Image (cartoon, rainbow, N blue to C red):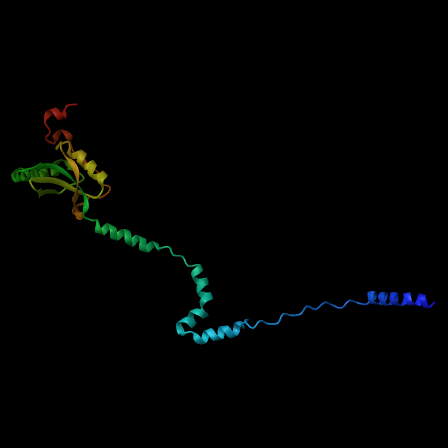
Length: 203
């Protein structure tokens, strides 16, 4: 009997321990490190060390970041138009003319100029070009018209070739007020009355 009690007693203790409600496990909180700094204290310290401008930027850093994140950096169309206008103003004297003669004789150049003026006033329809004499040693050059557009100058030179066979377009400094309208059409009133020799009038 005493022997049985010896074995039963430890068994009862084990059963009682097994049936007991388990206690929750509590993890030990880590001790705060001596190197950890309170953010509020750190911010206050920084504020004390800042001058007025740095303090302003510090306080508004979030607002500035949000504001510039949506800021568009494209140049406004108004300024683009202004740049184009200024470029045109710089180049307003650059253009084309039609050269009808190049000679060493100033008298011959004067005669060609006067003759061209008479011919143009009688036979050209829709446009009355100015005619100029330019001297670049050793030649006097007789040139007509003022054009910004090369294609328009070519069209005008083709009309003049009915009278001046050697007419060709050249780069030149032009008079902007004498430039014809974009809608100008160059025509000869009657090709049989412009003074060409008979062989040019044959069909």
